[in-house]
Image (cartoon, rainbow, N blue to C red; front, side, top):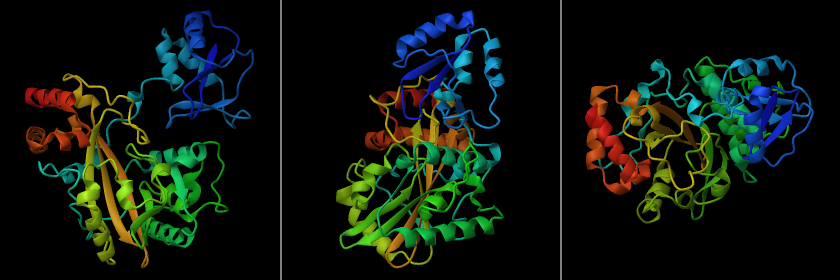
Length: 387
């Protein structure tokens, strides 16, 4: 039997050979050619992260772990089935749709042809919930625990002097969860190895981020405007927290064409005017990758999904954002990522018609910002017309 172990942040494979299964020898040989690690005649203790879809080497066999589960996929006749069990299958094996009762947000998507990247479209939150709690809470909080355990430097960052404001945000989050009859206990942030996430040494904004589905960004008013001072961002939409921390809000939005010239001053002024009542907005993109943790853009851009697979494979990825004051000099910016396939989104005739109209009338820059280059837009329009 051959066990493949994929490091949390590595691309290369390492192979541990354990008493042989000849039917996998061909696959094992091809895997050896792709790896840098030497073949060993011993068992490497590891655990499988279903949420991150990979194996992680550990110092000792995790409690409750059994190699029996590894034999099960070997009864399958082909190597790909075995690789899928080990977390090396295509990312398309991740959940692609929200549960049917968690898709009310789809009607909030703004499909006006002029709703481009520079349209702020904030509005009063009113009686809407500040934090959205749905059927995905368990899996998303578990995924956050995995990311915090394995890639903490990528999902959390904070400058000095943010602890007090972070503690205020933590209490706000806990109050919102209690009001929704959801336990805000850090038991939700336990890793799969059972180790509790204690309070000692953990920034309060980090603690808050681990118990809610939203990502949390803490903004501070400096003499030259609003800056990103701390963030718990486990589900980025193709941006790296480490690249943005400490920077003015203009620099945080550098990839948006025209932002600095047309919106920077308006955003600073809007944040300055914000009172006790939160505001919210929603943006959206179209990506083929359903992963919640997407800190980088694919090299060379997204592959073009052909017309016959567009509605099943392209994801509508939306961020529900709220902005709420935390004292005189601080704001908390929340980001809740919600996703559905384009097929689910267009299952409503009204939404399908509105989306078709948007594809036809939106300018090329708006389409590209949403993730649709000319080639993908053409395939998508054909699919919508055929439907």
